[in-house]
Length: 186
Image (cartoon, rainbow, N blue to C red; front, side):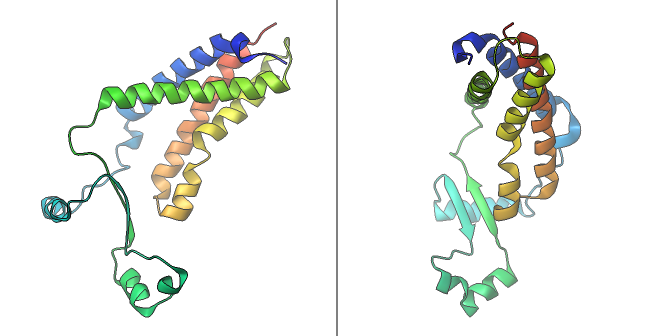
């Protein structure tokens, strides 16, 4: 068993590598540029939403509060007619990029710490690079990409962006695996 403290170097290195890869995936590479679409009649939609004075949160339309209501003729008609979807609203104001970037890095450190916990409890010092790579990579890939499919299955998130983010998670997992394999205690 290896303590998390003994794995601080691969934790930090993998977090930095994933941070850089994430920046490249979202800012430099064009593969996420098509993940979002502009609303038709955006200004009219914005005006209508502002008039409702909705606060930040997740909203579903049409609204349903019970299984009985979900089976009612009126609800089924609303769903059939559309729109049917989920809307996430954030606080008004420009995106706080600094805060989001900082929170992302903290998240990467947390994932890397979870990888350190699992590998440190299952592998011993001197374990081969490939074996560390396999375990660390599997845990990291699951941590970075595991929930995306659930969002597509249950919440209607499009599969195109979902598969791209799952692909990103594979890259992040491989980078994490490489850092842990390289810096694993002898």
